Length: 152
Ligand SMILES: [Zn+2]
Ligand SMILES: [Zn+2]
Image (tube, rainbow, N blue to C red; front, side):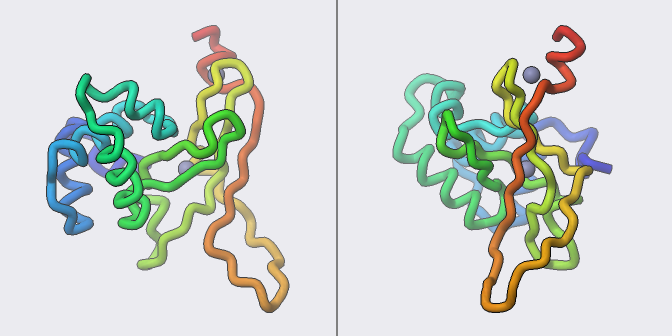
């Protein structure tokens, strides 16, 4: 259930996600989104840039990521080494009855350094005092990821 388009290629998924958000499909948008779908983990702007085909324009990459976050395609995960990393919002989890929520746990591996979305681990409601409006809650658990424990 975690992948709505389990049989589609990352390229197809990228096109479908862009179309679903009424975003024009451009080459940089398609490349950045495909990359993140393939990575299946959160990546920083710098990491995204490095993985794109040579000649990717840095400003365009930054702008594309910003557009995706605003459109609800990506969410940012704080990372002490990278500032922010970005992960693709899972349609099955990030959208609950029309509202956009990222109330899942994130996991940072102390061994390989990967940042992963644990979409099946939802955070319990927190007793936010009156007078505070919460836009987003991000909780990052740190430890050793599944792949590292399995010895890769
Ligand atoms: Zn790891
Ligand atoms: Zn996430």
